[in-house]
Length: 100
Image (tube, rainbow, N blue to C red; front, side, top):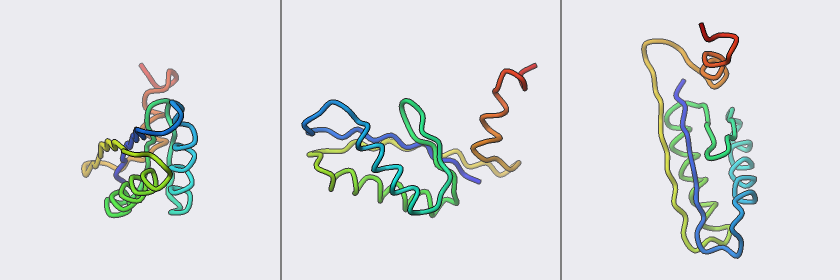
C-alpha cells in the first residue's frame, strides 16, 4: 500500500508554533479513516494513491482556510509493487531488534 509523507508550513500566522495546524491535519486524516503516523517534521499516511492525493489536497486547503496567509506543502510518495508494505512493517524493519 502506498505511503505518503506530507509536511505543511503555514506562513503568515500570528504564531511560530505549528501544533494547531498539525492537530487540524490529524483531524482531516481521521475523518478519512486513514492510518497515519506523526513525526517531528512530517506526517506519514497510508492509503491507496487516490486517497492519498485527495487527502493531501484537503490538508492543503484546510491549512489555508485556518488563517495562514500562505501554505507550503511538500509530499513524498513511496509506492512499491514488488512486495506489500505498510506503516508498521516499514518501521519494524529498522527497529534495533530487527537490525542484524
